[in-house]
Length: 266
Image 1 (cartoon, helix red, strand yellow):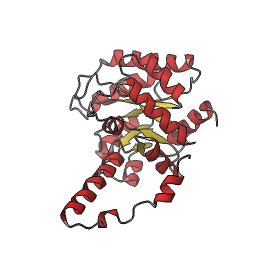
Image 2 (cartoon, rainbow, N blue to C red):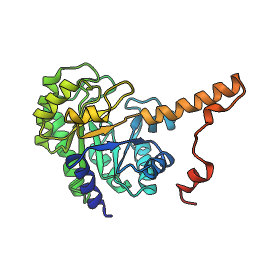
Image 3 (cartoon, rainbow, N blue to C red):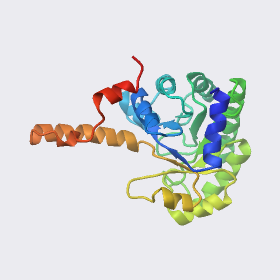
C-alpha cells in the first residue's frame, strides 16, 4: 500500500469506526502489536525516550525519534503515526523526516515543554498549518495530523479552553483532537458534541473502558506509554522474583522465543 493509501486508511479508521491504537517504542514491540491484529500503530515518545536512556518530557532529539519511527515502519505493513512531541527544534524538518521514515500521521503537542506553558492558540494553529504545508511539500498532503492539547494534563485550563483550541486547530487543518488526561465521560461527551474533529482519548488503568469511551463519542483510543510501562514492569517483577524466591512464575505466559523471533526478518 502506498503512503497516501495508508494515510487514507488511518483517517478512515478514526472517522468511520473507533480506532484502537496501541503504542510501540521499537521494532520488536511494533511487530508484536501488528501480529496481534492492531489496524494501526502509534509511537510513544516516552517509550522511545526510555529505550534510549532518557527521561520523557521533550528530552528526545529529532534524530532519535525519527530513527525509532523508521525502524517501526520498516517491520509493519499497517499505518504508523508518530509522536513528535512539540516538533523538536524544526517542525518543518521533523514532518519531512517523519514522512521519509514511513509514518503517515503525526501527533503534535501544543506544550512548549513538559508541564507547560502552552503555545498561544493562534501560534499553535499556525504551527498546524506549517505541518500541513510541510507534509504537502513532502508528497503526503493527506498526513493525518492529531492535534494534542495539554490543557487538562497540565492543569492549565478548563473544558471551555479545550473546546476553543479544538475549533481553532480544526480550522487550521488538524484531523483529530487529542486531550490526554481527560477521561471524565460527561466532559468527553461535551467535547465530542462540540468538536468537528474525532476525539482521541488516552485510556488508563482504572479509567473508562473502550465501550464507555465509545459511548461518550470518542473515536480514537490510544494507550500512550502504558504498553512500555507494562513491559518494564514485567522486567522488574521477573528480577525481584528471581532474586527473592528464586522462582520464575512471572515468566508464565510469555511469548515463545521462536514465535517472537519469527515476527522479525532474519
